[in-house]
Image (cartoon, rainbow over all chains, first blue to last red):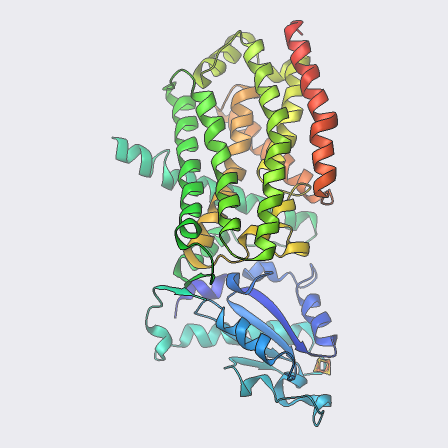
Amino acid sequence: MSRILTRSIWVYHFAAAPCNNCDIEILDALTPKYDAERFGIKLVGSIRHADCMLLTGVVNSKDLPRLMSIYQQAPKPFFVIAVGTCALDLGIFRGSYNVVGPPDKHIPIDAYVPGCPPKPEALLSAVVKLIEKVRNDTSKPGKKKVKGIKKL
Amino acid sequence: MIFVDYFIFPGIVFTMIVAFIVSWIDRKVTALLQWRVGPPLLQPVYDFLKLMKKETLIPKGGSVTVFLLSPVISFSALVLVSLILVKTNLNGMGFVGDLFVVIYLLLLPSFAVIMGGASSANPLASLGASREMKMVLSYELPFIMSVCTILIKTGGLIDIAGIIQYQQNNGVLIGSLSGFLAFFVTLLCFQSKMAQIPFDIPEAEQEIMGGTMIEYSGPPLGFFVASRWILMALLPYLAVILFMGGIGSYIGILKYILLVVVVILIKNTNPRLRINQTLRLFWGPVTLLAALSVVLAMMGL
Ligand code: SF4
């Protein structure tokens, strides 16, 4: 996979059905205190610009179609980081009537950040681990070049 | 020779390098103003190369040709402008009327943005395109008026080399009262041409999520982003040429960098205006200022 990608990660923030505390921590990680722009990390408003999706919360029946349509519109190569306990194993929303499972039942996830909510440091370290994974990744179908124009 | 000119020295490669540097200055100064460290020097290069490697997606229901063509139009028009400006400034190789050619070519990126937004089949992109149209309507009038000031001051010179020559003989235009007013007006117009805060209304990240750019991905987005950076590098350069006598020595480069930093400071210390406020600002006070500078220039001030 391309090394360039690891130096310029534009993240898109998708809040499936969180309690919104994880989202606040994500915004914390982008504030001047942690200065994620040092590593080329930037928050973008459209999934088509993004390289990485930060996904918080459980997936419920209402936002499953939206999650799927957004994930399909992501330009590959693309990574997903699940943030918070909810996105790992449903957390406090387990057993709720409208929950259709944790996100990794529906889309592939590349990194998990546990915590309720996780600290901004945990988020940044997840990004670092993801970068290492991408850099050391020599096998994988990711090696093959992504080419061509898709209509979506 | 033409190939070297267009592709290497004042052409694509050189323009891109300058655009990368200016964009880095922009991000670094912004970061310093917010007490951050900021990105490394090569960050714009990484961003651009990464976008070149990503997948190209086309919105369903959009027009494929226009959608893919508009970033290329915007990019190539700007490279042409840079070619004309740098060549004229360094070698004095202009032609009569190149000032007007530059003004027309500088309009093309705005049209490309409008076309790209309109062909995206996305409500937010259409909103951005319509805002961009209103922006063009609002800033073009005072800008042309301040160019008129230059024409009157220099006694009807319509070639850039002549304007630079005139300033070398008779002192820079910004030194006179009318020249200073025209420079101020031009700076405001350029700020909105570059779509920088306070006038980044067409792509307001917080309200319409990047507006006209929202459906772009991969290389087309890369070309649009690169055109933004080139605009940010070129327009201060044009202002230096028109009002401060061009870049002839180290002092000239210093003037240029100072102007770039002024643009960045304006961008970082102002909130975004609404579209109706912008229209009122440009057609009201700014046009009046431009008219005043024309009248002053006619009186010889
Ligand atoms: S993991 Fe905890 S903090 Fe995060 S969204 Fe779920 S409940 Fe809220």
